[in-house]
Amino acid sequence: MTRTTTVLSLAIVLAAGGLQACRKKPEAAPGPVPAGAPVSDDGAAKRRADSLAALAASRRADSLAAARAAANEEGAQAALRRVLAQVVYFDFDKDLLRDDARAVLDAKAAVLAANGGITIIVTGHTDEQGTSEYNLALGQRRAAQVKRYLESKGIAETRMTTQSLGDSQPAAQGSDENAYQLNRRAEFETRNASGTLVRPKP
Amino acid sequence: MPTMILRRALGALLVLSAPLVAQDTTRGVRIGLTYDPGSKPGIIVLPSRGVGADSIRTILQRDLDLGDRVNAIVLDAAALDEASRAATPNWAVLAKLGAAAAVQVTPTPTGLHLAVYDVVKKTTALIRDYAAPPMTEMRGWRAALHGLSDDLEESLTGTRGIARTRVAFERGGRLWVVDSDGEQVTPITEPGTPQSAAWNANGSMITYASFLPPAKIMLLELGTGRSRPLVTGGGVFITPAFTPDGASVVYSHGIDNGTDLYITDVAGGGGRRLSVGRGSDNLSPTFSPDGRRIAFMSARAGHPEIYTIDADGTNVDPLTPVEINERAFRASPDWSPDGRFVAFQSRIAGTDQVMTINLRDRGLKQLTSDGQNTDPSWAPDGRHIVFVSNRSGAKVLWVLDAETGRTRQLTRGGVARNPAWSPRLSN
Image (tube, rainbow over all chains, first blue to last red):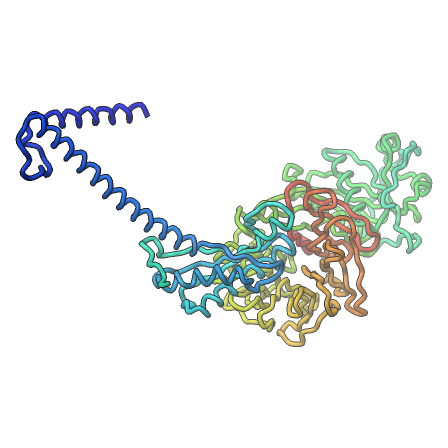
């Protein structure tokens, strides 16, 4: 940190020196000079300083606006990626999609529809109840159910791969219903989604 | 009571006399011991001399005890000390101790020397020599001694023992085998996601599932330690089992519409579907010993129950009773080697317990009640069952004698899953 601070201070000193130079040789000053400015040593110097300050303010405003716009776009991109990654949850020993899961999948289907190049891997998981073998089968049924639903929303079957990890990778540790609910889930991985995502039409 | 421990010195079991004359007997002939058929014959393992003699005696005594078919009479130190100074059996004292037979195993340069004495007839009943690797090759040496134990049990009771068997199981992302007496825990796969080991009929191969996508059914040659994939693809490939002839493997596979049983040749080729589950889960196949029927878990009625199906996929039949509104979870079936029972796990009052169903009259019997007990697998004697239990805390393997209810812990440490008891082994 110390080194960085020193470098920055040096830069500020150099910039100040530049301004000094401007004052001595106004005709060589870069940037716009207000037209028809009266030529008076004191007044000219003040106007020059004002104009530079105005320029700086305007540039600051421009870059803030640009940054804000970029942030909005970044936020939108992040939101789209969150939709693609959002987990859906299931009831005990069930592969049926609850209303909350359908809402998540509807949003996902819209993003997938607007971004036809993206493919997804759906992984079904279960809680630890029942046998580890049955849980692999149950996890696969959950993934297949998700795939079927997205297909019904117009997403091509060829864009989706399903798999199961059963109870082998719990999202939450513990042997209580809170942990179990977090573990009964389908997770989503995307492929070919590294570029800018298109927002779905409202 | 399986083991009698005598706490007082009982005098010399062997009296010093002329060396015993060896008597040849034919292998496999049962010794005609005279004892009440309702009780177990008492057996005394006599001390012997030589390198490893004490270990031999301890292992043999334990094998006989764990077989649950004889009373291994354990002597106290004083009795042992006196006995070790004698050279021929003291019939009167042996009889007084309740022994129907006495056995002595002596280490030899090439293996083990077995002598069996019939206490009732006061004769030497059996003399036999066994080849065994040096004691430093512990796993093979113990296997040879376990084989001797099984011969001995067969001679004494007419039923071969299960000492020379192993149990395959999962722990910490690997498959392992453990000897029937809980010793020689040995990994048989590299770390990964192996699951659901099943033995072939002669114990030379194990098939298992590897569930990390892309999922596979694997074949492991125990002699070489080499594994190769048998079938693989999208979706799940789980719960393989060899056909009794060892030529094929039945497994469960599913991707878009539940899971069904499939069969494939060990030699290669694609899988052929056997069950028609219509979107339900159908897994954990286990063959009847004659290879004609398969018991398996199916959730076709809405929750997991045990069904049977012909080996060609026809004649599906519910085995465990399916009752309306019942939310039973019955899973992990294993057909007994004598063909009479199927063991499985069943959820009872929220906890899984090991049960058996009699194939003839469909009578149900609950074998466990202490803690959660799952994944039963029969020993080749059709009497002992290995299963997973948390009765002592962590989920480890336990062995149950289905006839007496006697239990013992087989493994220690780590979470063990899906045990599979081997057939009787010859190597």
